[in-house]
Image 1 (cartoon, helix red, strand yellow):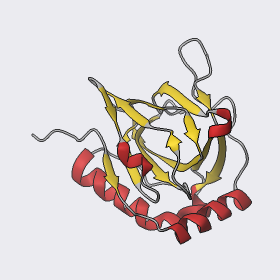
Image 2 (tube, helix red, strand yellow):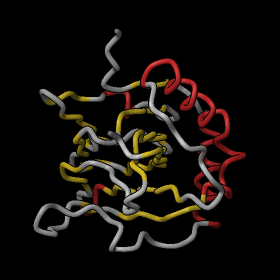
Image 3 (cartoon, helix red, strand yellow):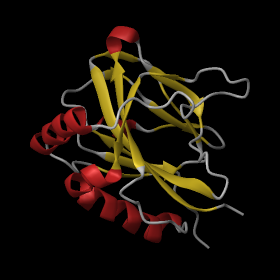
Image 4 (cartoon, one colour):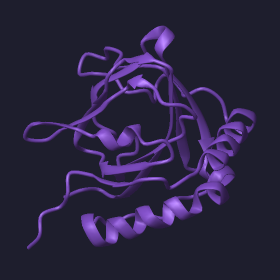
Length: 189
């Protein structure tokens, strides 16, 4: 039996022209700020997320990221093996903006569903930054802490199991933009 990878990635899934088009579209057509009740909190309800997040319904952007979504489902089938539901038009995606001016970051957390009938199984992060940034490093923590340097590749995609603890260090120069997709399925048993 083969072991699941800790994460999977693709370089250059989008070119800069596509990135600019997606960013412009999301800024103009998003569904508003993330509901504070949905934002990650720690065990004592302490705030873990220090950045701006806009929500956009998947149905609005699916044509712009369809090839990425197809690759995510293919990687799941070949590498992770989770039972996943199809993304629905009404599912929200997080458009995250980490700014160096405010040292935006996201402390250790896992991605989980507020719905008791399903679990988020995979998180896909699409780097929509238009310029290189410093800081904003992604780390995963399973048995140890693993850096994910591929997150810095503009137009790249990182995919990992949502139940693995992860964090983003403060951005120290520039702006880090990404679109996070959450792929869910039946409760993990």
